[in-house]
Image (spheres, rainbow, N blue to C red):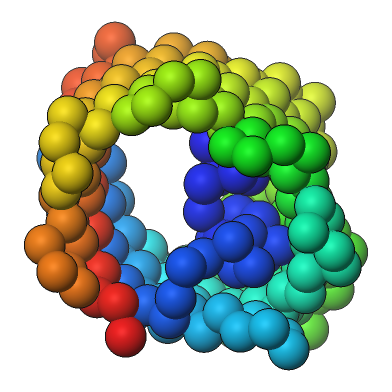
Length: 234
């Protein structure tokens, strides 16, 4: 549920980050190295204008999709925050004589009406403009998505979360999950997503300023995807 859990999907969440952080992630789809994604980020929340920089690379030598993203966020009052992100995406591939590229914008809002409840909405990759190879239609660079969801800590140590989204090709997705803090430094997570159907399990561990997260998702046809993330609080 990125809309209320990750500033990568909703820039307004930067205002709810406890402190500055550096993070590195790797996600591998279906045990194929050609479908691996590497993400790196640095976040700097502050009372004036929170900011973050993200770098992402997906694919392999013959096809690689890269992205640079800059996000800004501001808290309007104790309950509301807004954010915007600007990103430059380009594709390196032997399939094209030119380099297809696009500049796009993400917009997000977060509302916290009561303690321990977050409600978010985000619009990804809209508006956008192609700034290279404008005559090339590429599916990976054309889809926008609208997403909304919530997080709610219903009892101590138990968080539930859910989302629903709609994209340019009129595909509706949804998901539900929960996180349980087994003890102070260790969390276990489980959830399910539709479109496609993806059950998942995960865990998180924190020690002093360091954090580690791991996840595994199961596709009924294609198999298991897995990911790991490492973070350090500055």
